[in-house]
Length: 135
Image 1 (cartoon, rainbow, N blue to C red):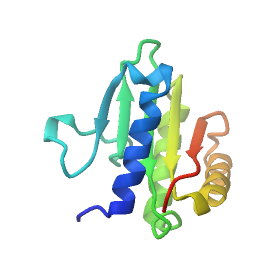
Image 2 (cartoon, rainbow, N blue to C red):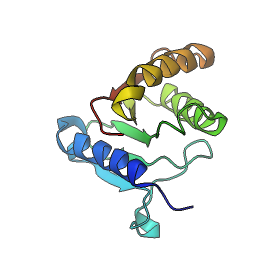
Image 3 (cartoon, rainbow, N blue to C red):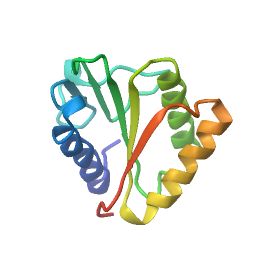
Image 4 (cartoon, rainbow, N blue to C red):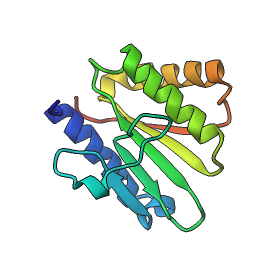
């Protein structure tokens, strides 16, 4: 399925955030997009392929990035993805889950992550929701 322009912009926002974040900018950045070559795509994480995956950043930090449009955020599939990523992060020290959503979905995304963290016992997982993004 072709990705929407909004989704592509949100994925690019994650990549731009990585470039400005010292802990991750030196790592290997893998992006799941239409232009990515097969060997340069992120690995599956608990049976779901994230939009962005960063490893090898020096201190062992791994980052999973997921972009969600307003239409996608509250769908069961998206929630299952986020649960899978939170569960994986809970078992991997120094990991971070970054979620990019349009600016008007920022609060909903933060609340959803908190709810899913409590539900899955992943309260200690570091998460970031990128805000101020166009939708």
